[in-house]
Image 1 (cartoon, helix red, strand yellow):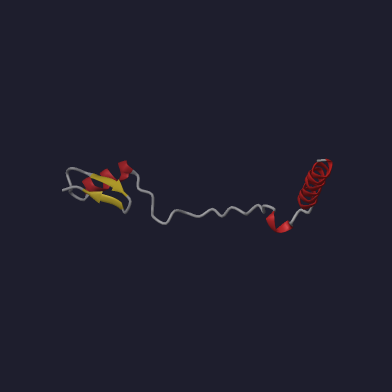
Image 2: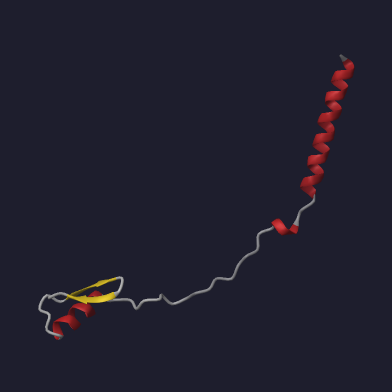
Length: 76
């Protein structure tokens, strides 16, 4: 009974020692690296709703226009 208890304590201590040694070895490949932020202009022109409406009315569309993903669309 004492031998089994001694063996269990010995195995537990060896596992704890091995895990402590692996924690201390900090691998630099796992550290986080801060990246630079790249600011870009949006690929499409931004559409302003009031300009879109006015431009369409000047072109002869009495209902004006609206903005969507592709830009200004005039309504008939």
